[in-house]
Each structure stands twice: as C-alpha cells, then as structure tokens.
Length: 416
Ligand SMILES: [Zn+2]
Image (cartoon, rainbow, N blue to C red):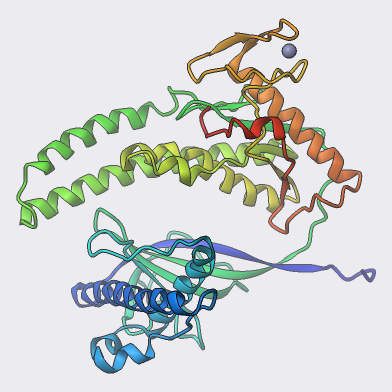
C-alpha cells in the first residue's frame, strides 16, 4: 500500500422499499412470475433430459428458443427470464453431480418474485414531489414507491427484485455496489461474545446479557394463537372463492406481522452486540435442514438464529470486526467444558447433567456457550498466529472447519 492512498473495497448493499403498482402493473408482475415459472420448468425439463445422455455436461440453452412457440414470453421483462435461467444453471451445477435435480415449480406454491438487472438507467428512482416518488422499471414503466429512506449518493445499482408477499403487498429490493474504505480487521479481541442456539426460540449468550428468552418472543406466541384461529376458518372455505382469497391475505398479514416484529427485535439486538463486542462466535449449523421439518408458522421465528447471524456478520464487518463460525460437528452441548470429555448419552430433555469423567455439575446451556466461546477463541488465536487453513472472508466471517472425529458418530442437529 502506498502512503496517503486508502485502499477501497466494493461491497454489496441492499435496500428494500414498498411499491404500489396499479392494477395494470400488478397484472404484468403476475404474468412475469408465471413466465419465470414457465421458463424454469421448460429449461429444467430439457436439462434433465440432456444430463441423462451426456453425463456431467450441462445444457446451456437460453429462454430465447422458447419465445418462438410461446410469444407471451415476449410481453415480460427479458432480464427476469435470463436470471431464471442463470439461477437454474446454478442449481443444476450444484445438484446434478449429487444425482439430484432442482424441483419443478408449481403454480400457487412458487416464490412470487423476479429479478431484473440495471442496464443504462433502465431502473431509476424519480422524485416528483415531497412524497410522490416513482421507480422506473423495465416493461412496467413508473411504479409508485414509498421511499422511507433516501438512497445514498454514489451507490451503484446492480439489480432489483420485485416480490409479492403472502398478504398481497409488493416490495422491491435493490442491490447496490458500494465502494468503501478497506478496514483492517482488528487483532485485539478484548470483548468476545458467543451465541449458542439452544432450544427452539431460545438463544443463549456467553455473557448472559444478550439472551433471547421466551418472554422476548411472547409477542409471537400471542399471534400464533390468532393465526391458528384464522387458519381453522380458512380450512373451511371454498377453494378459490372471494372469501378464500381474503382470508389467505389475512393469514399472510399475520405471518408478516410476526416476522416484522422479530426482525425489528433482532436488528436492535445485533446492532447493540456489534457495537459492544469485537468478536462474536456462532454455530455453523444448517438451519435450512432444520426448518424443513417445521411448519411455516413455526419457521417464522425458529430461524431467528440464522437471521441474527446474517445481521451480525454485516454489522460487524462494517466496523472491521469479526464473526467466527464454529463447525457444526463441534459437540458444544455434549462436551464437558472443564475436562472436554464428550457425554454421548446426553438427551435433548436433559437440562442439567454431571460429567462422568470429572464430576462437574453442568447447566446445559451455560456449558454449551462456554464450549462455544472456548472453541471460537481457539480458532481466533490460531488465525491470529498465522494458521494458513483459517481465512478471514471479505465478509468478515472466520470459519473454523476443524473436524471432531469423536462427534461424527453422533451428527449433531440443531437444537440438541
Ligand atoms: Zn468433565
């Protein structure tokens, strides 16, 4: 580095805004969702057929050849279709070698969103008055946008995702490239915090000051009863009727309300933690795997740990701080934090236990966070002393992929 010149890095930033399309625009957005699903399913079908004959080779057709026989595809944003193709290719590359394939998308069940790219000012925010703002979008033209925050100068737009929520609201999330001054990561770790995923809904922190307890999420429990009541009404309604759709949106709204409250709560928590601590240690558990076994309503708050991790990682990164991810095979609950003996007989219901090896009496959660903290600090120290197997990612995440063979026979699922 030359003196006087600051090094810069380009990072991605995302902002989400509510948009209020008129009826004609809504119809076109719905058509675009449908066309993306059509392209996904047709191209997937072609790729699966091709893969069967040409093992290991990926067919790379574009949506263009589908347009000849299906002229309705020309009515929607072509970038949305190309992005569908690119996402599909990515999934195929990941899944085909494992003998699996991406899933076909069913009408009414697929995600209601599409992504388009910024090219030559085709997407632009326009101010017509104090609260009269519009966003120019390909094919849609000017769509009303609620700008609850202004977009900082110098942010370069990359792409935009239009989505419709379960309650029938529309949002746009804009992704930008932002050039910022490169911060050297701190090398002093005075303040370290660890978050252990304990029981569903409970997150335990090493300091004991940043726990998420069941009283913090009572607001969700209250809503949950309400959702269950509305869900029962919904199940008795005639499919596709006007009341059915109304009820569907009502339930969607309740889910969104619960999700928003949780998001606010986690934003405040992660903000405070990123301000007060230099390093935060979390578990690298597979939450997607876990949430698949849960129903939608539960998943709304059960993946709070994943959301907290995401928020922490970028909030810490902005401050030049570090998020340490401890390998998912690390037996944080089953290991005795005093003598490191692993208790393979520990069950999910055991809240307290005594180590057979050294006789220490443990509170399950406290023992687990202490282990997580020790392991995280160990990773941190090895990285700081130059262990080349540990690399700090530009996102500020330090991942410790240390294998614990003794834990492999007992693959740990989240919440254990
Ligand atoms: Zn022990």
